[in-house]
Image 1 (tube, rainbow, N blue to C red):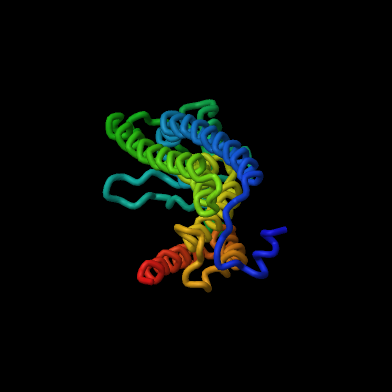
Image 2 (cartoon, rainbow, N blue to C red):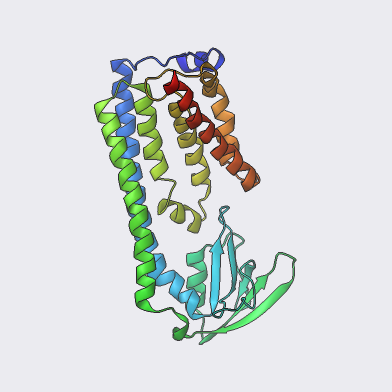
Length: 289
């Protein structure tokens, strides 16, 4: 009820969270924290499996792939060093060995189909964005896999950096939630960090590669709204300049526009990054006063 009232009459200052609400919020935070940690563990195991099982299989057949932010799988041929690929990585898989595949084919399923091919060669039928259909006969070739040391370095460097970012966000969330449970700004940041962990790499790769990209959109709406409002009221819960209090209601459509699919990604980037930069820039006016 108080939140609904705040949408129509945004307060200039966020009130301290009462103890009875703080206990429920802490319980919800613990639940989300556990789910985020579980998501990171599962997605890390999936990323290791994908790096050492799924990707090498596809590369052995001279193919390359990309997974878009919409979860769509695009396939093409591996490019030779210094050359463009024979088939750009923009085509959609429509059949393997003459058998049609699902429209929402996942990368792990595609690798399994290649592995199950009866012979050393497999026929992959691709459909380019123009509608043209191409049939490729790809033969397994272990020499196409890059050097093991270079692959390991790239894989573990990316994974280590991603896990370091997740750990830092979770640690900040723990400190905020445990030390300032009655502070609305601290609790919004604590929730934002926990939700953000479940939407960035390695969880992001897990959601995309398993065709569950809708989870990224849903999580992004929540953490972006919490981050936007908390930065506007940082650090004492007072919205300064005063017009920033209107982010309480307006932050909802802004967060949705910046996160939902089927909207131009450049426009979403302008909305999202522009909003955050504007809120951070407002801090100069606050501290100057």
